[in-house]
Image (cartoon, rainbow, N blue to C red):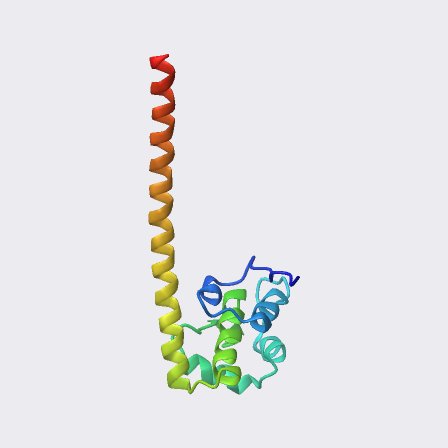
Length: 142
């Protein structure tokens, strides 16, 4: 029996029909740090720093913070996005244009999923309230 991969801490878009166990493992193995320098991220992804700089120009969703001295600071979400971009380009064989579209589509699907989940939560809350009301009414009738 295969163990189900750990989903905690992994962006939802990876699970919206696009699950990749290698990507999930890479994301799970991101060191627990507040931020990373460009060289650290390049080493984690096994790409050159100029590749990360190029991705910053090409992908709207990939913009690390820049310090006043120009140094880039990548947070965990930035590293996750970079890993997803790398997967789309290198593993899935997307062109840069195709990867951009895939990221936009993934984000849209993720937003729609969150909206549905939020609506479902509201409905479940309402059902629970109705069940509690029915229960109280039954007690009153007895």
